[in-house]
Length: 96
Image 1 (cartoon, rainbow, N blue to C red):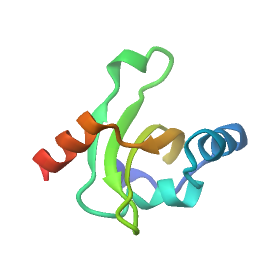
Image 2: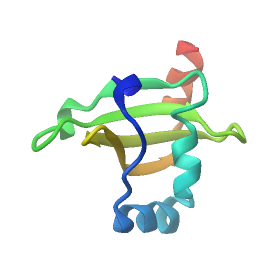
Image 3: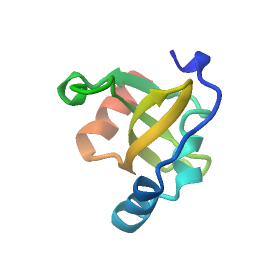
């Protein structure tokens, strides 16, 4: 599904929130979609109004991030980005 998207669409409030709350700069969050491995999972629990996914991946500096996103008009719209929790890091390491 990611091979069909053609860029990113950022909401200013989400971009600001991710920086203030989690110290994740928006360009850093985008990097995980280009670095391997990246694992994408459907987020059925939070997909009431639109389909949401979350992914586990690493930045260019190998920071491991958990990113929640949706796809609108063939663009990835990041909702939230933060460091992986311990369990998520374990899942990431086990899957790679």
